Length: 236
Image (tube, rainbow, N blue to C red):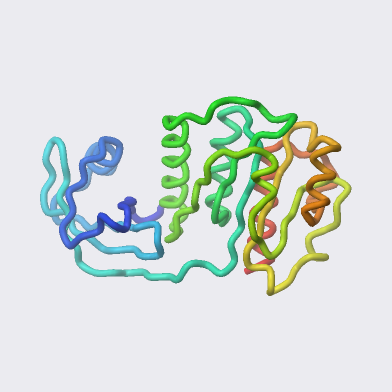
């Protein structure tokens, strides 16, 4: 069982904290049944984790008192940005959860010819952010992955990276690209049916390396999760 951890934004970290978030309160009070004097960990998503003690529990809030910093890590040098096409909600939820557990540093949802096309509302972004926070908490990561704004395919192609991958069943294996110089990595996963021929040409023009991770045709969420874990493992 993992330690009891909650997320508080780094700018809100103080010696004394008052937690009012309903979901967090419900978990601490009704699920975990914590009491005054119990210890709890607080991580700020920016590389630090703190030990707090519960001072008081009321109906609408829990007050915490800081004890000490228990962990501090610099931002990881190896950084994987996972770009994935807009898809059904349950697929995106699964990608965000599992790829966070496996070390993704940023998420870039994009629209392409064969992806779903829908408006990414503020409510949907809030939902996705909660999934990322919970997966970060559960996996005991100290750095919270960044959720980028949904963008077009051409916008996804831009950006500065040491190496850029696009998954392709006809691509080369990962060991062809392993290098200590590759710290900032973009991993682009195509939609069901793969990238269109026009998009594949654009990827090639933007110096994407076509990467194969399986002899079999994988679902979007399977490919995104497996490739993230595979790259993160080999580049540690």
